[in-house]
Image (cartoon, rainbow over all chains, first blue to last red; front, side, top):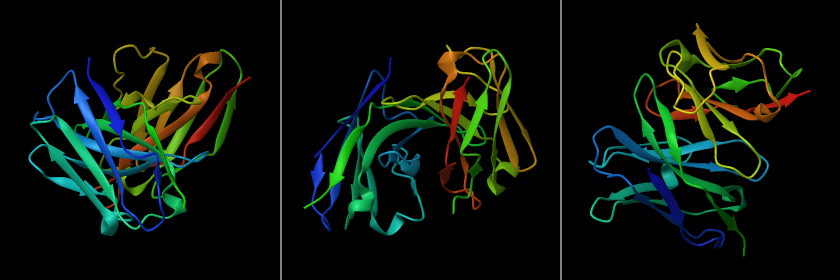
Amino acid sequence: QLQLQESGPGLVKPLETLSLTCTVSGGSISSSSYYWGWIRQPPGKGLEWIGSIHYTGNSYYNPSLKSRLTISVDTPKNQFSLKLSSVTAADTAVYYCAREEGVHEHRIDDWGQGTLVTVSS
Amino acid sequence: SSEVTQDPAVSVALGQTVRITCQGDGLTTYYASWYQQKPGQAPLLVIYGKNNRPSGIPDRFSGSSSGNTASLTITGAQAEDEADYYCNSRGSSGNYMVFGGGTKLTVL
């Protein structure tokens, strides 16, 4: 049973960098079949896809966040990470890590429980 | 504005059939996937591809697609189907993903 667990600070100051890590258990992050991604959801609002990465390092990002975003992978630790710079209150959200699969039949088939990150001074 | 649009809210009588739709340019080339989200929970994949259900998803959930529109149909809606539903597809350039704004389903 694959499990994904987000970890990182729950409070980040404006203009600082938000950093989260997702630890994958019950499966290897080094599988050619999957991408590993981040999705967020501001309180009371809808889902926003942030970006995802393959274990080889190939990544793709939401164009609206690309200039502030870095997603990286650490295969020995079976983890992947998110860094979002210059945050504002608009970046306050529940952040989910997830596993993505497929191209034409793309799906996000496993999700972490999510972690709330608040941007406030 | 979102590249993928959904109706904000839909209602259905218990036991009846409801269709939730999603429109976007990327849907002319790529299939949508559909997610159910209940309050306080992570989203759950219910349909992907042409019409595929993950293990454990009831067969009252089905998917279809035509042109730039994807649809999620619940045949015989149950009280436990009341939730927010999101579609997800590739953006118009194909190299990123995008969610629709979500549809709140109320089962009357």
